[in-house]
Structure formats: C-alpha cells, structure tokens
Length: 517
Image (cartoon, rainbow, N blue to C red; front, side, top):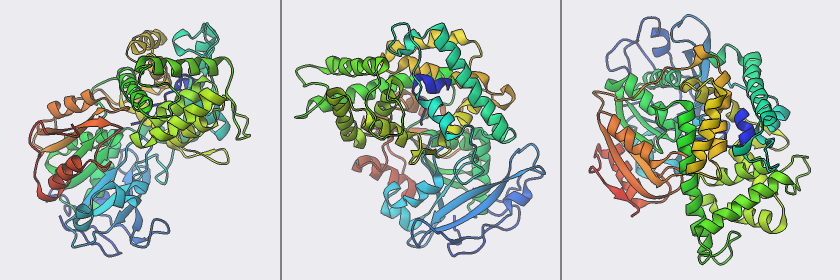
C-alpha cells in the first residue's frame, strides 16, 4: 500500500475459457442467489473476450459494466477493464488478483501472472485482473496536470532551520501545505467531480462481486496484496457466503482513521530503513558506513543527506529542471524500501548522492514509484491513490491534529514520521459526503481466510496482519520472518508452498506457522 510520503506531497467453480461471452440468468454465478433489485442487468451481462493487443497471445481482454452509484443502479455506468490468462489445464474457476496501491493496475498484474502465482495455480485457475474504478483503463481519475503533479509531489517545505524538516514547518510553510492540499481536491472536483464521490473500496468490492458472477463463479477465489487486502476484507465482510479461498498478503489496517494509518505506517518504514542499513553495512561498499559504525550511525548519515538536500538541492542530470531537494530524496529512499529486491538500487543511489552530490538516481526511484514517465507524464496512480485513501476513512479537519501527529510519528520514525503525518492533509479537505464510515471487518460465516504478514514490512506493519487475522471470524495468520513488502511469490518456498496448498487443496496452514525464520 502506498502513501504520499514527502511532506509537500502530503499537502499534497467452472468458467468458459474460450473467447466469447460468459454470464446467464441473474442467479448464474451467484450461488443461486438473485442480486439486489436493480442490479440484475449487471450480474447477467457477458464479457466479449478478445485476444489482447498486449501481454502475449494467450491473454484475453474485455470490459464489463457497473453502476457508478450502487444506490442508483439506473444512473451512470462505468466500464471496467479486465484481463485474464486462461488456465493451462482444465479450468476450475477464476483467481482474481490485485497488486495494491490504491491506484495499482490489476489488469497489468494479471499480465505478470507467471511471476505472480505458482505454476500449479496457473494450471487450474484462470488468472484474472481488473483495473478498479478510477484506475488506468477503468474511468481513470486525474486531478492535476503534469506540472501540477510535479509541484504537489516534489516541493520542499519552508522550515525553521531552512532544511525542509517537516517537523519544524513554519506558519508560511503550513499555508503552502494547505494551499497545495486544497488545490489537489479542487482539481479533482473540476476534472471528475461526480466520479470522485464514488471511488471508495466498498464500491470496488461490489464491482468485484459483479465480476465474479459475470465470470460464472459461485464463490470468489482471490489474491490481494497490500491495499488489495482491504478490497478482499471488504468483500468478505459484504459477501461472506460468496467468499471462497482468499489470500490477503501485506495487510492494510481497516479500522484506523486516515491519520492514524499514516502515523502507524511510519513505524514500518523506520523498521525497513534500519534493516536496509544493517544489510548495507555488511557489504564491502556501503555509502552509510560499516558494521563497526552501527545502524544508528548509518541512519544518521541518511538524515544528514536529507538535511543537506533541504538546504541545497542535489544535482539533477536529467535536464528536466526539477530540484532534488529533501522531499525528492526522501521519496526515492522510501520508495525503494518497498522491496528487498530494490536495495541494491538504493545503495547505488545513496552512494551517488552522499559521495558525489548527485540526486538523479534517487529522483528516478521516486518517479518509478509514483508513475512519472518520460517525458514528463504521469499515470493516474497518484490521483487514484489520494482519492481512494481519502474516501476510505475519516480524517481530522483540524490542522492542529496534523502537527500533533507529526510529532508523535517522529518518535517512531525520526526520518519519515513527520512527513507521513502531513501526507494525510489532503484528506482534511475531501468532501465529507464521499468518506466511508469507520468499520471493522469480521466476515462472519466466511470460510477460512489466509492472512500473510511480513515481520519487517516497510509499508504495512506486521501488527496490522496480526490484528486482521484476529478480527476476522475465520482468519488464519501465516507469518514470514523477513524483509520487504508482501511475501507470496517473492522466493520463500515455505510461504509459496503454504499459499499454493491453500488455493489448490483447501489446506489451511497450521495456526502459528512461521516461514523464513
């Protein structure tokens, strides 16, 4: 699950596999249950599958329709893009997959099926991904033009010591934060005023149930990672009798307000940062010192780099004119911490920055995280990210709450804590009527749901996985003692074997199973 990290950004069953149509009467693929009144046309529609123009010859693509407002099914409709990889053997149904975000493309995730799920799973399931409403190919929301997005993501704060420290933002800096946050929300109103009111995860979960029925599956088989776990938890809570095998990997907390989420997430980034520094210092060449120096000293070198970049931007050799100040350095570092596989890149980027004053590699790491392509264009992932985050949970409307939260978060994460709190400020101005009420999932009556948590996860703290497994009526926790964000499909045979056995054989792991230890 992504959050806007920099301080200024804060302101800132059997299924037909041949090409053709699926669907049927309103109860088809619905366990014999008729859908809610007014939704029958959506549940009985078909998908005209055609060979995809991207992703390889075996993939099929299409669209299905959902109501923008489930309270008004006769109103505006949205088209949702979907891609599937038919099972290599006899299909036993569909496995829906979502990579997270918010703003991540399930359509693209399905295209990566060979690296997403095991060979045995691909043999027996059609792997299906869809772009959630508001994302990529599914009625994408876009709130700012590229120049506006550059400013929203990358501008440094005015701080008391002149180093851009978000813990010491001045009153003038605070006014700039508020102006940027309000400007983002106004941009959403101007460009997608109706759509922005209907982008919360509950709507996405309802869309997923329409897709389940259209695919002809009586029950949903699902793999959700990061923010995708929230979609899955919402689904299981809404439709527990339709929830089949569900894997929720890298859990996003469901019962916190937006600011509490930001504060707690900061602790995950601090844990990941220290794990990265320890790994780096054990290598021959490390820009943040040696094992003899210790982790604290290595973290302090990164803090010094942030302060230096806040006072005088690092070099940017791309020629695009952007200043690589504190915010963009922080964005690049934190973005690379999502995956242990990126640690080599961040080591090299920190070496360039600390030793040569060159911030280009860090800039590009941040660009990759938030979908900035060359030349100066963005995917809509940031707009979708903010819109969904602000729609899913209440946020304080009092600016003082953010100052207090910044101080609290800095205790857990001195480098990234304060900016994690300020990163929620845009939600203070989100339309109140578009914000979901707080909820706690229990999915009473659902079959066992497998919750996977990584002990040193950077973006979704392990405690969130523990809590969800406890809250769910049938939750079972699988622990991966390791680094990185999410665990399944990242190379641990124990995790992969347990998840595959759950999906293929309905074999639930023993309570308390820990892998990677």
